[in-house]
Image (cartoon, rainbow, N blue to C red; front, side):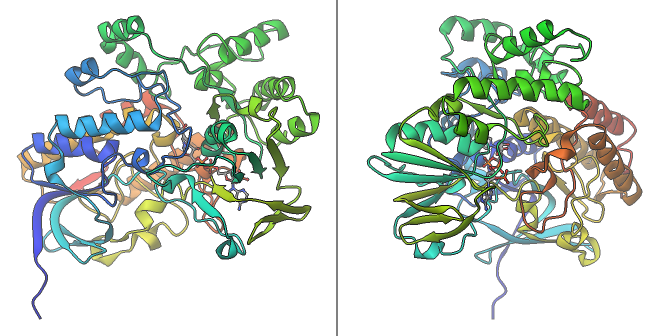
Length: 537
Ligand code: N01
């Protein structure tokens, strides 16, 4: 039998989202031969798959975009403050064309395994179709929210209508006109699609297990004058973003919620809810919202007050109000357009499936412990195996054949969120242990890609063949990430940040909470000290 051909390149990148495309561009700049492997048939990553109605970013597009090319940021015109999915996908396609990236991307290619050979210091990457590649550097640009949590409901196979998952939406769209639709899940995806589906469907029933907090996006079209102003000062905007805790400048108030009186506190919350632009600005209303339970409760009570003032039916309002044991913002804050208002429509129902759990899907709908709901279509907005799912979906074997699945059996462990001890010459972009999903992720991606590229440039000059995080440094970093999380209220939130949404997943707070500027200073310091904590041979 002939042995399969092996394609040899300097670098394999897995994933053609924001991270993979920029890494491809930068690696080419180093003169490396690169092959990018992508499971989908187009670029865009999360924006390729998540085409559900109402999908849009929750970080403003003027910030949630690449900063590496002045020409790119000058020529692209965002239409709205928070661009819809289709526009973001057009932008990513534009980037792929503008920088001629497609010629190094192989689509429809899902990676099955990757193994490191200590003798040659090369990775062998095998696709699900059995193709083999060999490379010196392996870059995992697989995304934090790319493995949907499959709906596991008894009886789903018997359902006679159509069902959909938010992250695997039909490309041609779905027409819900005249249909009775059930929507399970009220995280960012469910909250974004509720108002849009309600407009079209004959009836929408939202099945909510946990009430989360949602704040208005205050989305609006971007005028020519706004675009011109931003473009004239883009460098300043990006510089402010770099020094902001989330990598996006959002006028942070440096006062404690406890040092002001009731009137001033309310004024600040109102300002952020309405006038100052909405969205994540609410998290910056006071400097201790995510650390001090009393401060946090003020924010939670404010939003609960808004829900009760908006939703006319007091029973629905009560179900929609997050319970006191969920601190504000500790499950990822949802950013919406008309979410709570939608529950005032006659064709929208709400079922509390914590109080009355779903028992089964039936051929004609869904049953809870309280009764049966007749449905023509079911939408699952039930989330993802976040942060680790895409990496562990691949059988990754590092030095000495060590399995990543085994190494991470009790939760992810990284050095700086970018490297894993025992897995030489492999880097992860915006992975667990870095600000990642708690930041403007496009900014964090650029930070990682630039850092990795500089590291590789230097090691090529020095003739280094093998780069590997030192285990003791990794242990220290994991402790530091945990300590930082434990100084906040985040771990209380039982969220996907902790893996709490996946039955059986170890509970470890995965992103690094200390903020983008603090993180950048750490990784820049590591670079300055000859990449301290990395063994280089
Ligand atoms: O997923 P989620 P998502 N029975 O995990 C419920 C990003 N994103 O796709 O909270 C009943 O947040 C689950 O209930 P509970 C963003 O980072 C960004 O909405 O586990 N319900 C929850 O309500 C976001 O945080 C945008 O009790 C079940 C929901 O499903 C992340 O992606 C837009 C259930 C899942 O919420 C994930 O968001 C969209 C069950 N068996 C997504 N299983 C932007 O705006 C789960 N649920 C950029």
